[in-house]
Length: 155
Image (tube, rainbow, N blue to C red):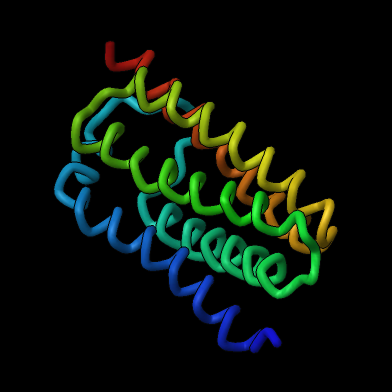
C-alpha cells in the first residue's frame, strides 16, 4: 500500500533537495549571470528561486502520484523522472559554473525532450500528474530562450 502523504513528501523533498543542492553548489557563479548582457524579458533574480520552488513541488507531487499508481508502466515514467532530474541538476553547473552557454542550451533542449517524454509517460498513468508538469515545460521553454539569449549576447 502506498502512503501517499509520506511518498508525496519524499518526492517533493527529493525534487526540492536537487534544486537546493544545485543552487548551493553554483551560488557564487550565479551572481555572474546578473552582469551578463541578457535578452529582453529577463526577470529579476528573485523570480528564479520562487519559480523553481513551485516547479520542484509540482514535479514531486506528479512523481508521487505515478509512484502510488497501480500501473505497470510506472517504472518507465519514474526512470524518466529521475533522468530528467539529473539533467536538471547538471544544467546549472554547465551554464553558471563552467559558463558553457551554448552547450548548456543544447543540454536544456535535451532536458526539455526528457520532460516531454516524462509528461507523456505520466499522462498514460495519471492525466493530472501530466498536467502538473505543464508549468515546468513552459518554464523550460522560457529558460531556453534566456539561455540562448545569454549565449548570443555574450559571445
